[in-house]
Amino acid sequence: MNAAWQSELARLGGWTVVWLVIGLLVGKLATALFIGSALYLAWHLLQVYRLSRWLRAPEATEIPDGGGVWEEIYRAFRLLDRRNRRSQARLENLVSQYEASTAALPDATVVLAEQGHIAWFNEAAVTLLGFRSPQDLGQRIVNLVRNPSFSDYLHAGRYEQDIEIPSPVHAGSLLSIRLIPYGDNQRMLIARDVSQQQRLEQMRRDFVANASHELRTPLTVLRGYLDMMAEESGRPEQTALRSWVTPLGDMVRQATRMGNIIEDLLKLARIEANNGPARHEVVPVAALLHKLVEEAQAVSNGNHRIELQIEPGLDMLGHPSELQSIFSNLIHNALQYTPAEGDIKLSWYSDAAGLHFAVTDSGIGIDRKHISRLTERFYRVDPSRFSRTGGTGLGLAIVKHALEHHEGRLEIASEINVGSTFSCHFPAERAHRRNAA
Ligand code: ADP
Image (cartoon, rainbow, N blue to C red; front, side):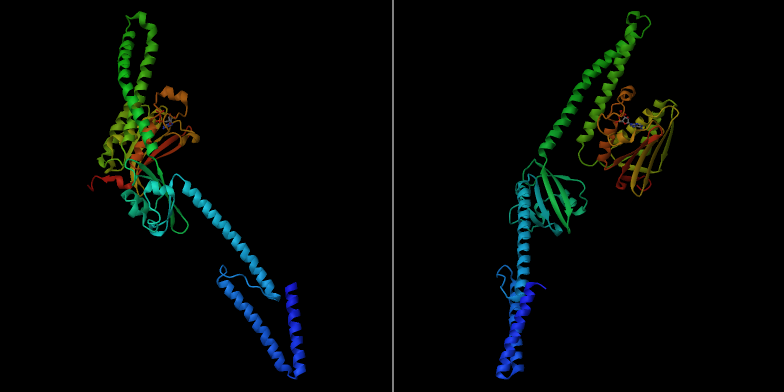
């Protein structure tokens, strides 16, 4: 038993003795003991009252002092109170540090409560989004950022990707917006000014497109002369030019390759310049694939077995020349990387997940470690093979960009020396059925 309880019991003992003596002296023992107990109880009730008053408003009143066991109880409460105050101060410090750091962020940060009401925003939200403090707190964000794509993004609930919208404050500026859901139905909005990046990206694209365009004409002239010289050096009567046959043949091949690279760079630039979803034009996929297979058969010259499976009546909405680029690049690669006697299977079909175009070959395959990088521009699995096949290294980059333009995606499965499957998946909304039309 601790000291407080011992002193409390001693106090009770002493109190009882005092009232016993008084009772004996006045000859009314029961009455004296009753009065003693009532006073003791009243003193405890007073302590309970003081404690409950303090508990109701701990900040407003000091913790009361009491004797005996109450000393012990008050000491425990005082300790608890001190600990609480310390952790509250720590939390307040943390919150103010967090607020100071987010306030200093160059990105606009907005905390959204349920239904998209603004609960808090930082300084950058004032400059980037034009919010006013405190008037705009509690407002619905869609009433302040008036943009249909933003409203759709906010309500769709799919926040894996950012969206870009024109700045509501500065004309000509572009904002990248990302929503991050957290806690109980809360969301944090981060907005960044990406105008500068956008301008640099546009400059890069323009530069590549212009440089490719400018190189086209001189290269055509060079190729013309090279063709002429190669033809001339091949004539039997031109004995003096015989040693030039091989170098001129090489020059023609390399010039052709350069021409292909320039054409692919221009194609890529054209696809990148087409912002927004590909236009909704009905593309007769079956006819297009039949034509591409015919061309592939001519290139293969009977060296491959090419099979085509098509779902009858299935066409799609999209951009004809971009779809042709996707299909022909994948077919061309299958031919290029499948040795003679190999099989190439093409299929075009739909299911609940959408529309699919797949090219399966029994070719050389690709090591797993390269697969995620194949769609990068000029990525080479094997640089020596690259120069031999005469590929541009841009085919799959074109496929990827053209697919993105159709809200599609590329899936690659491959095994070395077994073969590869390149599948293109398009959303079901792009289907167009001929009999239903
Ligand atoms: P390239 O002009 O070199 O074919 P691509 O961008 O079309 O450029 O392809 C990139 C690389 O992916 C190729 O260099 C090749 O190594 C590999 N690749 C593409 N398709 C296939 C395939 N069907 N089988 C094996 N490797 C392939």
